[in-house]
Image 1 (cartoon, rainbow, N blue to C red):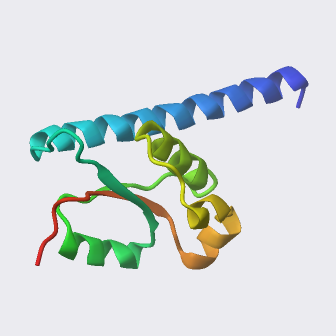
Image 2: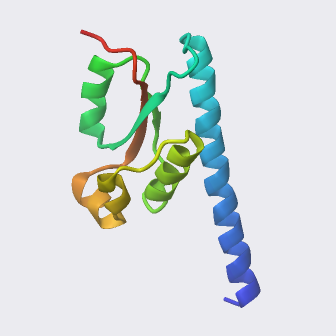
Image 3: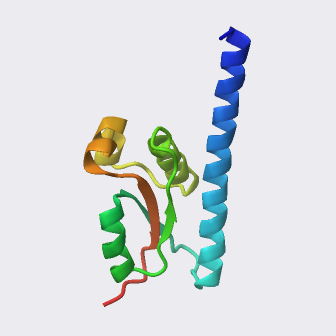
Length: 118
């Protein structure tokens, strides 16, 4: 593969990543309006396994999910956190793709920090 093709493929992949992040942020904004978020309310964001989704859905409403390609999960998560103006904690900052695969983390879940089901 020539350098031009490699650069083009890299740029295309970055564009898809950015598009996926922007679409998820768009969905979160729409859900926030629909569910009456007040100024200052925000989303909790987690990388979760399929098994963990069930528990989140029992405890929180709504739960918005995104399942990016496994090789982009970490990058998408970091960019969404950045757009939501949420800093990565030490654990999140130390995550690697190997950790995510080992722990079965294949989804990004967002849920309101204020709403909790009992």
